[in-house]
Image 1 (spheres, rainbow, N blue to C red):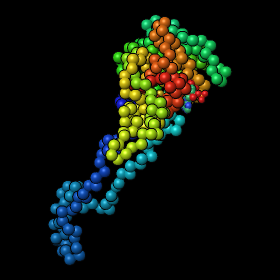
Image 2: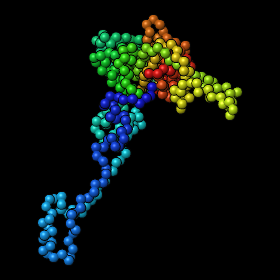
Image 3: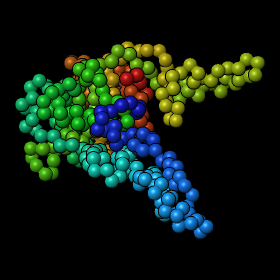
Image 4: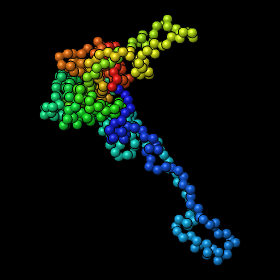
Length: 330
Ligand SMILES: CC(C)(COP(=O)(O)OP(=O)(O)OC[C@H]1O[C@@H](n2cnc3c(N)ncnc32)[C@H](O)[C@@H]1OP(=O)(O)O)[C@@H](O)C(=O)NCCC(=O)NCCS
């Protein structure tokens, strides 16, 4: 789920490190100093000559400059700051960037708010309460709702802001309209301490219809058999040669054959304050149980796929799917 594609204009502004040449509207090329056209007067010059020469300088430009100073622009790379809490790189001191960063950072850490009354009025969004009293590891409990991902109105704006935060955090492109049309958003909502009518969005999973995905290769399939020693005469290609590399750094390889798979998870996000309490697991359970009407899906049997997972996403995928979850190309 990590890729580098364009975001909307506002987010792009702060997420991308722009090359310095692009960020500057000037070039730091030293200009040749304008020199006086005549030589400065010497002690041997007669007063008459001096007088004559004085009148040769007609404009300001032609006048011999006094005390010339060469100015240099120092390009300080420390104006770019990467926040250790939300990972966003932005321009320090630029008011617009600072504002965008502080709202993004708060959302990444503590999540956004959800107003209960809004979901009752938005009929077309088809807000559906999927599970209530969902217990978490820390003893708290919340509820899970699902919403059409292409909802409009107030709920649509809320979802758009949430999806933008997730995309920015994952450095992934926004989901296309076509994908949103066939997707559902699952939200984990925790009661807010501040108000009864408000809840905190403590997790979000997007589920979408897909057609095919690839099975993840087991560690044995990646490493191959010990008898497969290569010889210089007949070199045996490594086992990974016929596999698709999803993430070489984490040795995640897939088998290239496309297998029929009904559900994909293109985005999954839990704000940092709520992680490791099973929220992502509960969201995935809810999506697998309800995404296809009256047909619960089983991740262990390869019925659910993820897009290129992050390191934590891979760990979660392995725990939830127990080796059965697949990978698909977004
Ligand atoms: C990945 C993410 C969604 C997990 O959410 P979560 O609610 O913390 O996950 P859960 O609590 O349900 O984790 C269940 C299990 O997954 C595994 N897991 C989850 N996050 C892990 C991590 N960072 N490191 C190692 N294992 C992890 C563990 O086995 C965990 O069980 P445990 O806590 O008993 O050890 C969350 O860390 C996140 O939003 N990260 C940023 C966005 C991202 O990377 N999304 C995934 C895209 S594929």
